[in-house]
Amino acid sequence: MIRLYNDLIIQTVCRIMIPLIQLFAFYVIAHGHYSPGGGFQGGCILGASFILMLIAYDINWIKRRFSENKNVILIALGVFIYALVGLLCILLGKEYLNYSAFQKLIPIDIARVRALGTLIIEIGVGITVMAVMVSIFLNLTTFGKHEKGEV
Amino acid sequence: MIWIMEILILTILLICALAAIHVKDLLSSAILLGAYSFLMCILWAEMGAVDVAFTEAAVGAGISTAFFIGAIYQTTRRTKD
Image (cartoon, rainbow over all chains, first blue to last red; front, side, top):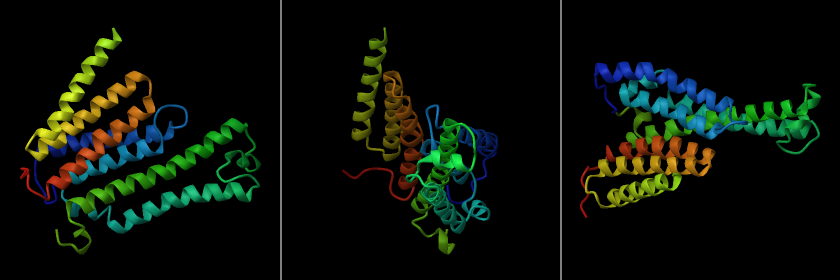
């Protein structure tokens, strides 16, 4: 799981499956406000695709592109998007997370403005959940030693 | 005819839950817990709570099984008790 285990069948299947899983995760995030799903579920599926990549390939191969520093930045970025949208609503003169305040910036129908605000919030939630799931799995499988390069 | 399916799923659910407690191999226990989670997801979807069922399928059957297997990888596979 941690060291490279060269298996042609597993790696080929993962190479085909991972883009499809990620596409489905983006579909779930983008359609969260009028169908089952949302930021949390889509983020979990997106995190599961990266966990599948970690299981099938070498952990050091993954960490060259998806290091722990970038992971922590992604966790903070999702929370930042959430808080920024909420505070922007206060600055525009409505309550926290009252998306109808965006009607002053984008003059379209009020229901469409609310759907747009929910979409931005769910993108933030999805980024945070994905990065947290990958971080939990990395620390669980390596005793938290992977940052020092001991695995 | 839907209640026959409900009773069938509940029976398999109970068998999976009891087997996950009593089996000695921790890896089989994790897989049985994933099966339990998936049956619970089917039951919730059948009762009309599609959003809860989606969360159960994504978190219970997908992510938490991977976490359990990752944790078992760091310890022994057989239980002592």
